[in-house]
Amino acid sequence: MAEQKTVSKNIFSAQIDLSKFEKATEEEKRQQDVMSESTTFFKDGMRKLMKNPLAVMSIIVLVLIVGVIVIAPHVVPYSYSEIVSVNGKRDKTAKNLKPFEYSENELKYIEQGGEVFPHIMGTDAMCRDYFIRVVYGTRVSLAVGLFASIIVLVIGLLYGSISGYMGGKVDLIMMRIVDIIYSLPDMLVIILLSVVLDETLKPLLEGTVFQKLGVNMISLFIVYGLLYWVSMARLVRGQILTIKNNEYILAAKTTGAKSGRIILKHIIPNCVSVIFISTALQIPSAIFTESYLSFIGLGVQSPMPSLGSLANSAREGLQSYPYKLIIPSIVICLIVLSFNLLGDGLRDAFDPKLKK
Image 1 (cartoon, rainbow, N blue to C red):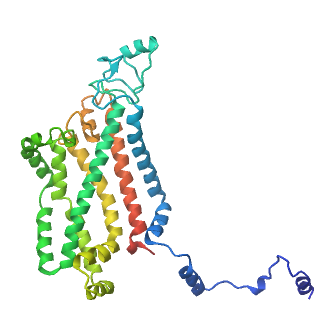
Image 2 (image 1 turned 45 degrees about the vertical axis):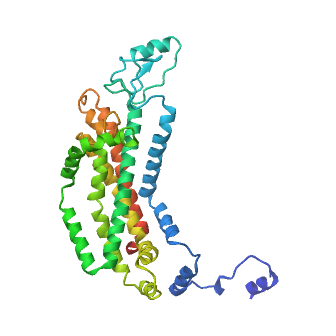
Image 3 (image 1 turned 60 degrees about the vertical axis):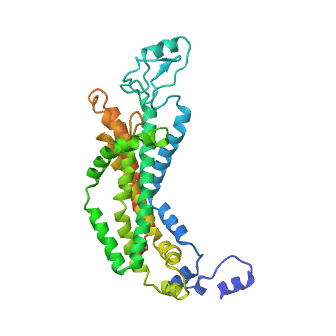
């Protein structure tokens, strides 16, 4: 009675009578989840992705790598093909310098009051700054990976969409073509194309942007356009075979929508998460392939560097300068591992089949 008297006298009191409340049931909790703030598929996936520590760490590493390869050429006064020079003259004493080491001519120039930008990772056997070569090598490897993944995405998406949507004999014939392409050895095709196209493409590439990349890299892109899209095509076909029997596809057909519009507006948006994840996982595969080909001498044309060609050239001085092999190898591992972890994170965040 005393407690009730106190409550009645203090109408505006902040005290709460807990006896008037009870815990929410499971049904009420589910209703609250349904009535919560609406969100899009992309926002929900990004929220889950940001909660994945490995994916976030991978994004940070990739952003740092991209930042370095974009900013470094504007800060470091050396070029990837330029022999180190002192006071306008080539410095032949700057051969195989260690990190942050100066050559004899550079030390004399510094004693005379001159300023020399340090060689962060030393120099190579051709007296070229090794840091800027690693930067440009990372640029080439990333560009090849991104460009190759775009080729795979476009061809595989179009081919798989047509095959899965048309079905029947069209699907049967198109998938048998995919099986034949799967049986071709990709490395052998790259080597054969490099030999065949060497004399054919050289005159056509002179004076163009592709001349620096060389015939070998053009052959690599052609092989990606010919062979590497089959996995993407199979994946897209499988998704479309599942989606095309849904009611909204039947409704679109009854309204007179054309096949192209149904594929672009209704089918592909519903399997875009799987396509996006596969593309992200394709990038490290392309980077590793390019690095391997450059390592065996079938990559970019000298003097343009890539991470694979830098690792290959470092084998000669492995005992004396092991860091020249370790540095590009670490960069390759960081890029490939980051993209793989990011792809796994995207799969966990955006794949509806993995949602609990």
